[in-house]
Image (cartoon, rainbow, N blue to C red; front, side, top):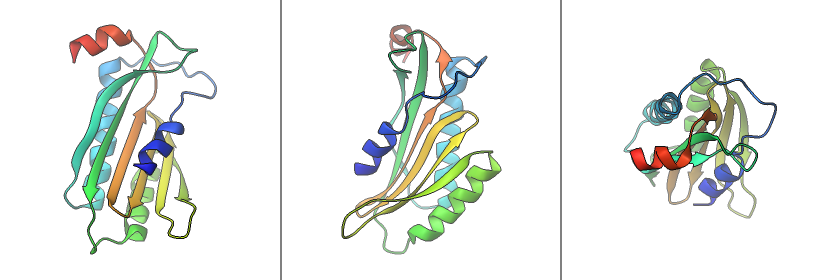
Length: 152
């Protein structure tokens, strides 16, 4: 759960505005695709934790939306976080994403990796004691949050 909170904190649409010609449905498909391909690259029994969920891009972008999507894998002693991180860094770099390793604080830190770029505002992998999570947030697209939520 800590990893999900950390990813959500990092998922704002800050930075210089980017001209987006994609529709919200394309953003949704894009983030679901990269998260599911990431889970497949690592392997194991992944399940949808939440999403894909539409959300507003921020106070400064009331007419723009983005999608978030999270998958989780239960704890498995046979899985090595370092190997998972290496696989994801390779996949994400091939997708044009910039990556950075992550380690939580505390006496028993968990490992992870974050990525961003292209059609991804942020994507993250956390190897948590109770399992692993991959959370992605799409870039922003023009759209009406209320209308899109009614369509879901």
